[in-house]
Length: 88
Image (cartoon, rainbow, N blue to C red; front, side):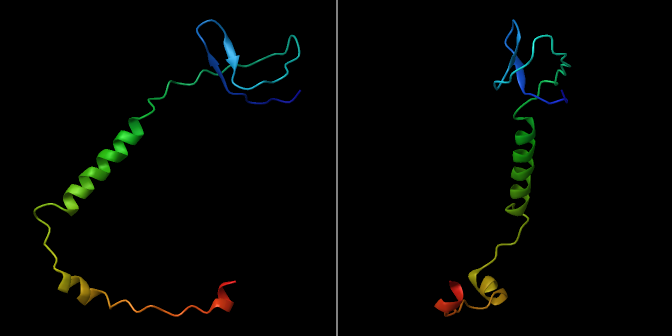
């Protein structure tokens, strides 16, 4: 039998496969115990980084832009006609 990786967990009494799998009696197994992950630690880190970036972007040291400044940088929107034949 070739090797295969199966997800499993320890329920406090025995190792249980997360999905059914037929194992022949006496099958040799190699168990690898994975380090317990802190599920939200990376999410907390990214959220904190994003919050700090937004605080800098909208902080007191940033200039206040007027609508005139924004319109100057972006030309007015002009809708384009869509050719129905080219969209199908």
